[in-house]
Each structure stands twice: as C-alpha cells, then as structure tokens.
Length: 166
Image 1 (tube, rainbow, N blue to C red):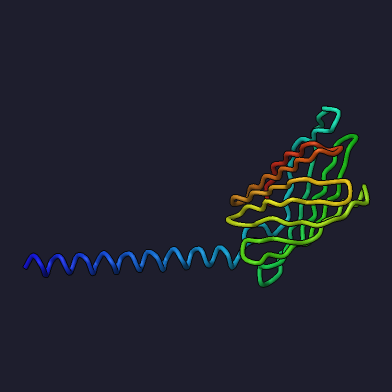
Image 2: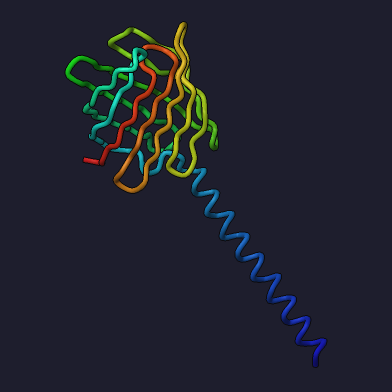
C-alpha cells in the first residue's frame, strides 16, 4: 500500500510540475508575443529636465504610442516643453522577442540616429545614439501610469516624466 501511495504522489507531483511549467511557458510566450502591450494610446503629464549647467525646469509632456496589429512595431512621439525649453522626440522601433531596434529623431535640434535595447513586461530600455549625442531612455508602463527617464552627457542631462493615459 505504501508503494502504491508513493507512486501516486510521485506521479501527481510530476503532473503538477508539468502543468505549472506549461502555464509559465504560455505566460512567457504571451509576454514575448505582445512586447508593447499597455503602451498604445495617448499620454500626458509633467516632469523635470536638468540641463548641463545644472539648471532644472518643470516640463509638460504629451506622448503618443501607435502599435501595429501584430504588436511587433511601435511608433512613439514625445513632446515636452517648459517656459524656455522644448524637445520633440520621435521613434520607430520593432521587436524581435525582447530585442528592440529602430530609429529616432529630435525635430527641434535636427538630430536623428539609431535605437537598440530591450522590451519586456511593460518596460522599454534603450540606448539612442546619433553623431555627437547618446542617451539612455527607459519607459515603464503600469496600467494607466507611465514613467519616462532620459539620461545623457549632452545639453540635456536628465529628463524625468510621469504621465497618465488620456
């Protein structure tokens, strides 16, 4: 009887492990198959920009994210302005799993370059570069809230923005 019970427990444990593994695999597969889930739509909010001279200014921002039907490509537009400063950032990126590549531009300074990084679980982390400019950008989306952080060694040292979906 003990041998039968032991085999039954072992088989139940193996079956439970397989079910849990398949469930986690399906969840991971869904997360990878929808890398931009939660980003689509229009957002607005405020934040601060820190310039190379150490001055800080409050900024108002609007963002728009357009995701293709397959959830593999994202077009982003981020416009921010203060009383004396503004930027107009656009990007066009595609994902291959969690890997992200594409192009970006900043209209008011006529900058454009490449983007590469990763996207996973409502978070985009990328490195953007152009001749004479490089920055790290992180966008985190949780429900209807989004935070965007940009750091660089150029004219703009740090941008920190908190937005809500409109």
